[in-house]
Each structure stands twice: as C-alpha cells, then as structure tokens.
Image 1 (tube, helix red, strand yellow):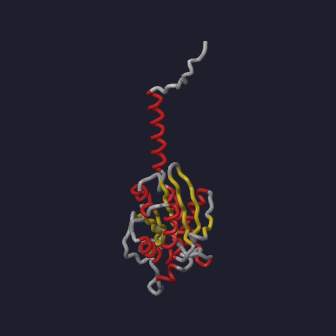
Image 2 (cartoon, rainbow, N blue to C red):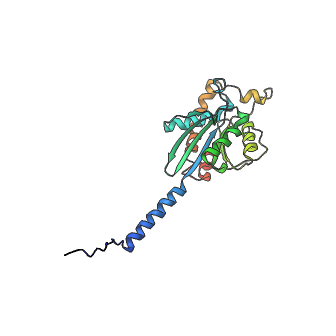
Image 3 (cartoon, one colour):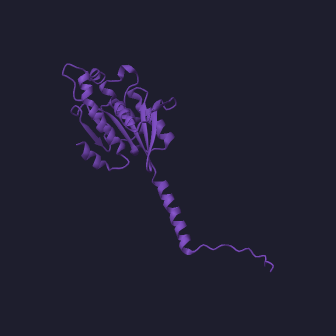
Length: 222
C-alpha cells in the first residue's frame, strides 16, 4: 500500500512535557544559584614581610590553599596572586594583592570588575591590634573610620563598608614601641608556631563560607 504522504509527528505525553519543563527550570535555578565568594588576604609583598604581623591575611590564604592542594598564580594586570576553586554551586576566588597594603583597594576594584563579584560577597582577612593574640573575629561589615590602612584603602576605593572582615588578633605593641614597627615586625619563632593553629582555624572558617551561615561561623570562632 502506498503512503499517504503525510508526515507523522511523534506526540509527547503531558507527563513527559511536564518533566522536561521541570528539569529545565531546575537547571536554570542551579545556574542562578552559582555564587562567587572573593576571599582576600591582606599583606605586603616581598620576603622581608613574609613573617610579619601585618601579613597574617596572606598566611590564612596560604593555609586554605594548602588544605585544597592548589596554588595561586600571579596576574600582572590585577597585581595579585589569584586562585579559584569550585564548591558545589559556589566559586571561591582567593586573592593576595601584591601591591602594598595602602593600595589594596585598587587591586580589589580590578578583581571585582573582572569577576563580577559584588562587594558584599567579599571577605577581607587582616590583622587587628585591638584583639587578643591568636583570637579570631568575623564581622559582616565595619565602619568607614578604620585605622587599618588596608581596610581604609578598600573602603575609600569601593565607596562602601558593605564587605565582610575576618580579623586575626595580634595584640597591642609595648608602650615604647610604635604601631608601624610593631605590625611590620617579625614574630619570634615561638610566636609563629603558636599562630599555626590560628591560621588553620581561620582557613577552615574561610572555606566554610559557601556552606554555613555567618552566624554559624561566628559561633565556631568564638
């Protein structure tokens, strides 16, 4: 028997159509949920600053990268050491500015523009002389009147205080010691050893950012 010439189009049941639509919506929601967390350790570049109190931000980032077994690479345009890591639907962007502390904001602005990461998804890790030695404190945001040159540069350049901070306590200098000589001074070997556990705890807190609430992390650090 000859064919009638009509093309037979296979039909999709309403159930199958509903399943396809549901899967499409689910994939769209998963793409929308992807977030970038910018994790920034502040410090000064150069071997002479490696083990100074002002460079605890670098040390925390280094500890986190060691846990993940990844390495950062220098980006000349951003003037920063950069590394990325994906955790489920989130991307962790590790940043170590290689400009000096006072110009940290310039590097952060470039990174934010390239990776389209809003300021409120940025966590800045830095030293704090007002906190006891080896203590850690996580804050959702701070004030414009910070006495820390790195934080001040970021606030002035970005025009906002709406970024998270993880403070690493380094304690106050001795009465006869200037603040600059204290924060730029090297730790004694015993002090550096004491801080290894602090850097580990801080690194764990940083890596928990995509999976836990700020309140949960603050509780664990207290």
